[in-house]
Length: 355
Image 1: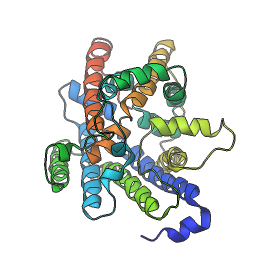
Image 2: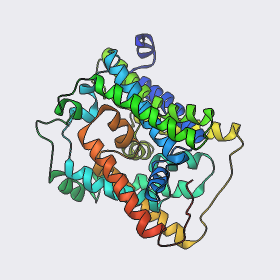
Image 3: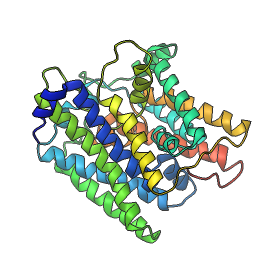
Image 4: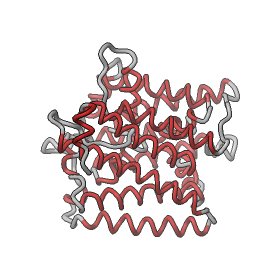
């Protein structure tokens, strides 16, 4: 893939933003049409069900593993150069942040990525929650909550100035990731078969995972031709949501992958909803649900920044390269969500719907 002519014509920053836009649009379309949501999968799991949402999440995750690990084996990216792998990780941040994020996404009735997709379809609850999520993420990054985040993150760090590649740590061959992805894909397809999920939904669920791999490959390709250092990254929504908000608040903002990603997801989800006639305005049902969603969004903003990523950034993007802290954060998100569902939804009004 020769991207040098594009870089020479529009510049490195705009090219990164275009790649973010492309990745985001693929993600937005696929996530909207498949109703991809980690929170919904966690709720099914907490209630002893292996239904539609579990199949969609597992197929997305396994597809990301297959595409990303396959791309690495083909030389289309170097996992060790990924931003998430090339910096020190925080085990304590992954644990505390993951638990907070898991609780938050149950309270907010959707993870940060799902909120962005729903906002594009006219869900005003998600617009409010998404803004709170972004503001709290900024506060945790460089504002009033930054000291607390730094203190928790510093309690237990990875050694050697880098994150941990779980495959390398276990002395497993690199092909292990691809094989594991294929096994999980077969499991997802079996769950889908039992729930009679149609081929269109399965293709779109796979598309979410493909978008993650696309982001990795595009940013790696840019890093090989760029004069300045380029971060090799993919879909995540904690940092990008904060950066997108700051883009409109600071003088001389810089175009980068994040700045294209968030609008790309919104545009892709909007187009998918418009074509399928799923656009409709929705608001809060009362003060109680509104307060619950606002608290959940705040927990996700702080937890996602502390954990080093959201349900997508740590859960799928980081998991697809077996970053140690990302996999731990994903595990803690599941634990936090299951606990929150048991304590809040199952002991309250039953059957809180997944959006």
